[in-house]
Length: 256
Image (tube, rainbow, N blue to C red; front, side, top):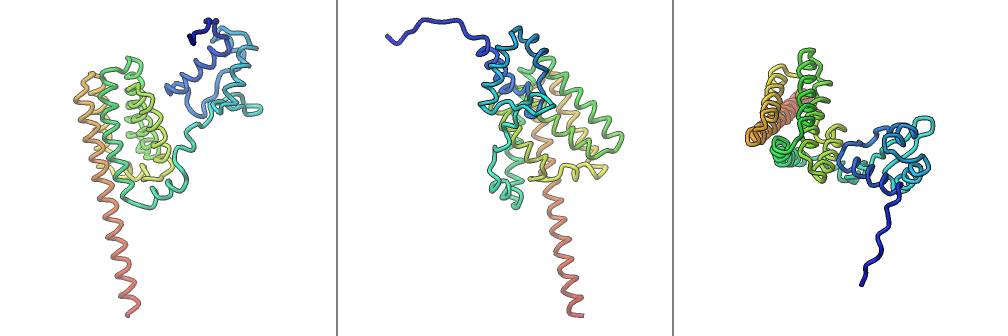
């Protein structure tokens, strides 16, 4: 029979598994700095030699990295989620933009429904706090802050859904969005009417989540991303019309 005696787990192995789970669940984020060795050993209740052994294993596996003079950090494990050639294709073709929004609408609607049902009180408090900061940024008319908080708000909802695969896939997708691969979110926050609509839509999502109304949360996310889709389509069409008008003007000028 292929059974073997059970031995107590090494302390370093328990540390490895705990840090792995914190990374997997998104509690420890890529680029985040870990506490000092002394603080971490105290928090985990293990000796420094056991902690060092665990850290060495996690470094060897590419999950942690040391920066001289700065400390220990979670590695950017999502950095290569999409090959550069595919990223460039995304950036060059409008079809990818609208497929991206459709993908977000499907996944984030599901995440919002899950968050309303399964999110902890702390999860919902984090979402609400981000929305309050969005209101502040809106009052200050700061498109850059509104765009940044927009991403934080949506990612917080995905985190509150507590689906590990969904979390890491969507983090990779939002990394591309932050890099401007699909569209520049700040464009969405420059017009007063659009800014007000977006804030109202985020308020509706937050209200539904705080009330733990799962169907309303799903519907609010779907309405929001459908609005984003329509607004971006109108923006792209306006750019095309301007380009056509510019080309015609150049032709007329050349003939004259």
